[in-house]
Image (cartoon, rainbow, N blue to C red; front, side, top):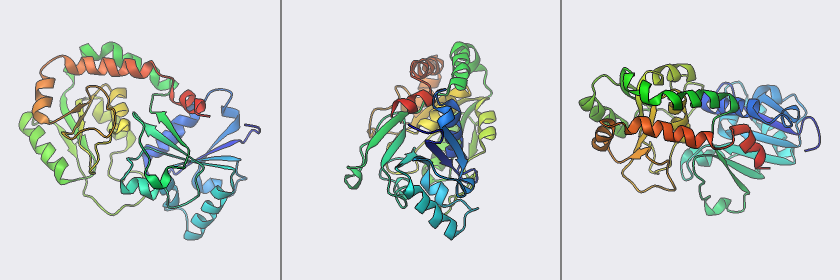
Length: 306
């Protein structure tokens, strides 16, 4: 890259906090030789700025639906993104879902960065789009937290007072999951707000980041099931759990769409109950932490893509 403003990272502070957090973590964790050449923008502020030659849009659907932007602002935003020489979309969505498709109702992207724990195969309509996979790892600052979790998991995990937590938009499958988990351990926590038409706001269908972290810091198992028909592994949930010392468990009896995180995916609550009765959960936490710490931190991994 050739100028101090070679990379503009765009995110929306007013929509999904998960992506806002990702953009902030990525920018702050970029290698030292990248930081002077990268700018982080809350999207309304970027409309008045001269764009860099390379623009990284973190969650285009969130940018385009930012409630602070008028329809005309969105038209200007799309035109401005399209004026950049390189237009990169960064998302963590499951291929085949509406959430994935919404990301392509906008600029003409020159590359896609897919964030997760395993690569995906793009649909035929996007086969010509350059694809880069970014393994979702902790930042340099988060590595110290993960190392502490790794060192204390065996001692601390059994002492956590909340047996399980389920967080996400309400679905029939999640309601059934909570009922089964309650039959097993009645003192768990479920946060399942009613489903609603898609809209952009920071807390849509989730606790705030701080609230979720406080909950998971007291929880043994962070359990989830997908709300769509695909068996995609939600790496964000796994890392959120591990950074708080909780054990990430996805329940899914279907064959995986791709390689899954070893030990993180169980078929049902009956298997989880057997798993929980051993020292396997603490060992899984330790193993996953070690695997993540063996990889480059998030910013370095992103820089290596280019």
